Length: 171
Image 1 (cartoon, rainbow, N blue to C red):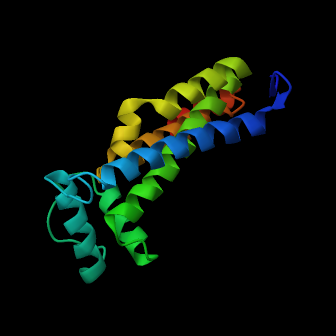
Image 2 (image 1 turned 30 degrees about the vertical axis):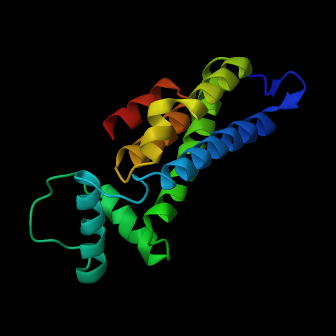
């Protein structure tokens, strides 16, 4: 597959997509922080935040069944463990993995089509309103979007001979 868009090597294009997505998300978060909604936790966001606090205080093993997806509060607890304990800090991390998702999806599209389409997909995802919106909320959708983009990118970069495909299908 070609690895350029015009005269630009693909790694620079992907970096440009990442930076565009990151700047757009950070501008959104800055505007959100300056509004009455900045730093507020409502409904599910508050549940996730308190769950992460609980995990920090009492450890990772619980006694009750999960009523929301457990990965996100564990990630929040991990972020707190490394020193990112504010809502704004978590939103910046989410902006980073949202921008990474845009670059990963752009590269996945490039791998299965051509570089121009990869760039178009990357620019679209960089400014996609729902993805940017969820990066500004303490909800699992931001992490899920990043992990799904990572899975799609990993899938697109594989050489899928039929025997290997069947082996992955068994997993």
